[in-house]
Length: 380
Image 1 (cartoon, helix red, strand yellow):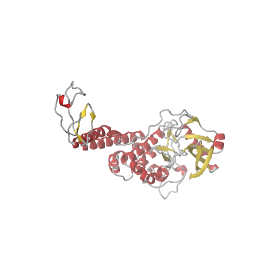
Image 2 (cartoon, one colour):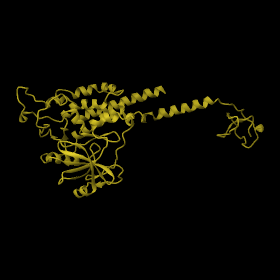
Image 3 (cartoon, one colour):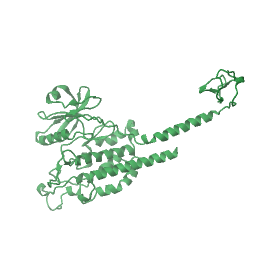
Image 4 (cartoon, one colour):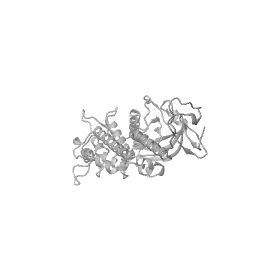
């Protein structure tokens, strides 16, 4: 029974009244809910100001935010499917099961070519469609480059992993390779992509640094691949280097162009040379430059070979591009100063390994993340 137009909280339920005022009354144990108000014995009710409920709600929200903050400082990269397909099979998009790599006949009859989306020295790339899946169809364009094309195909087949674009099928006879299509394109489009309004929420130092971690992870994978130590030779300048990688829809990186991955074998003394022309500039490692001065014309057979440490030299420049100039990126650069200085050693043997760089990157990322998390929690 209601009295004086007030509302009370009885056993966890609010009872409304015309006046709409809120009140809480505590009832001693044993009080009968059906007993008239005047006959009950217990503590008298007290009205609680409306502001108290609002303050309690805000306090609860802060507690929840505090407990969950670690999960929101950096949006985690979408988890890789732990059930990777066996060699010779693939899965992409929403496919639930693995399918065998497409054969020549399947490529000819089931793949619909749509439009050209890229072209290089070895092949043209066409956006295509296979069973409602968007795919990238690469076609060899110059027969004299067939060896490079087949080398890239062999690398793609043998290095299938989370670090490499998914192979869907191939036909050596026709000079075609089919891979998963990534609409954001090559890593060289990163700034243009992040400047779009719909991607502003990932244009942060956290996400950019994660890309740098993934880039170094790919280099480390190539240096410890199932096919031995492989060097990313198509990397004589920054734009060319970035074009070798694709930016996926979940903002991770995969290696795409594997046409120039020569083998280094320290046990046998086998080293590499990236191309047969003289290289210039400070993006390439010092040992890639002609060592005999301008007075001596370049000769490929006199050019010394080198090893995988040329990839290490380039890491700081690629990472700087990936970090960009967003708030916090200079803070990351400061914490990476020592490892980047080591990467730029003039003596290749003194440079860190890719694993050393990767370990440092991860350590710095976790340290900065924890620092930001702690500071944010203190503000609550």
